[in-house]
Length: 468
Ligand code: ARG
Image (cartoon, rainbow, N blue to C red):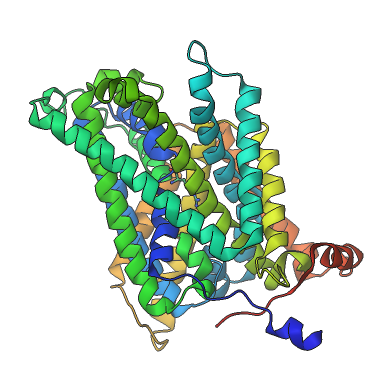
């Protein structure tokens, strides 16, 4: 049994296609079907809104170059957590794990599942908004189904990911082609004087960027599973570039298409932009867009799960979370305890959560930790230039993006202080308070022993090794 335990590790099952779909398939989710109206309402004009979408894409492409370097220098799974642990040390890393496991990931899962549910139930309530409880139950059901799939088999959840990515690229393709046809017919009204009425305050731009960046979030997903990726030094940078350029191109064209079919005013007042688009261009087939939006969210949810469980898993392996969370199923080789834990918390967040606020707090916290991660990269470049680097970016790049990230985190607080951001900041800091007694001083060391043994037998899991 001992020998078997030692050999247990997650397999390298993810190839280039899987990798691209893990990134693109998570990025394309709820955002492109929910956020275009919020972006244009806050910046005020079609031109400014396209600039926001393009800037988000550019920012994400540049930051992903930095992550390609990080992921090839530190080839362990766990994304920001492991990079911060190796550069800024355990306290910061624990704070990330704590916020990520208890808030960011579950919030991501809850947000996407809510938009999935919204689009699924919409056709059944044509006259009125669907009851909140129905939406939440459908969202919870989606979370449970995907949690089960991810616990069963890595390969199967990868197939789900690839299938849904293809489906949503096709759906966005339909929107692009439909828009191109309308554009060719001379619908260019929205693009005349396209910067008229723009709002260029810090706050409107900040809100628009948060919404846009939510739609692009998931670009870092592959860095969570480096140990499961075949030939990471080649496939990680390649998959990042392919996936992010694909998504950026699609998002821009889709926004052009929305604006071709609707005037900026119509876009601002539409509640489900893809459905309005569908009704205008596809007529009685308009409901297809509702289906496409639901499928898109479902695929993104799967990707979020796939990588979300991994943070928990890696943090537990480093002794930052209870042992049980670092174990993998003895036959299926999936990190089921970590997945189950993420599911439970996601369901809890789902109860009070609503989409808009989830997006804002999500982006705020996420960009705070991206900033910490980037400073880690700068540190590595200065202090450890001798490390082997299959892939390296010029140091100005992380410095530049670090400045942008700092702006993103501070702008909404300085311009329009809201008490909620203070709560989120306190929550992130409370990680450090938990760290000192429980991790540093190891108070109550055997606290979880009995539960661990019980759960280990019950879930048929055993400690998993690093896969390097
Ligand atoms: N971009 C996705 C969407 O538009 C949200 C991704 C949430 N983040 C994540 N890391 N899974 O729905």
